Length: 231
Image 1: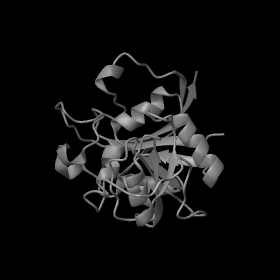
Image 2: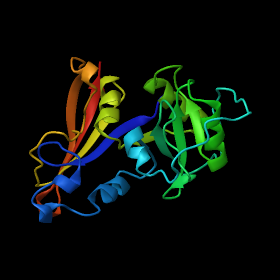
Image 3: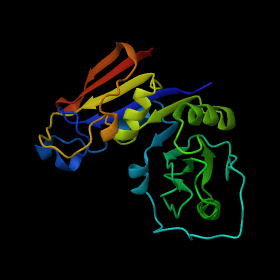
Image 4: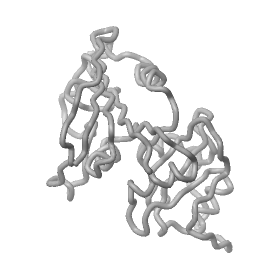
């Protein structure tokens, strides 16, 4: 069984997610993302590799080890109220920390990740699971999180590509979208949902979207919540 998945994002009216580029600057709402995250009930959350790299404190892990590890889930800590989960298919992130804001880190890897990288994760106290041999199987990742850690509800808060991957896989149950009265207006920045160049023809299997709630926030921002039905 997979968790109930909510994609939670704050954007400009043109759907761009890098707040540093939004104009007018005075219409940005500091702390809005985190506040709405709390209103959604907190809990475990997931980000992509690029977003995860922003939290890393180490430059790299050693490239060699004399240890060999099975490709089985490994947990430095169980029973946490919330986990910070990061997609890292090929083992690119050297964390140098065990948690983000008190939430233990869980790395989602493919089986091709090296033993040296696994040794680095274990040294840092970073838990990990495997979801696929060569490429990430997002459905398997969700099922593993539910089975191994009891994650029943998960906030997807990654970059556009990871959000888009979950959307196209039909794994998002709800979209929480706060739109601020700002614009970006230029190319080169991820949207809420994005894709790789070789995925431009892929379409999300969304059969219906139902408005669950809408709320006008301070400063003219609007918070929309939609329930998705995937086919």
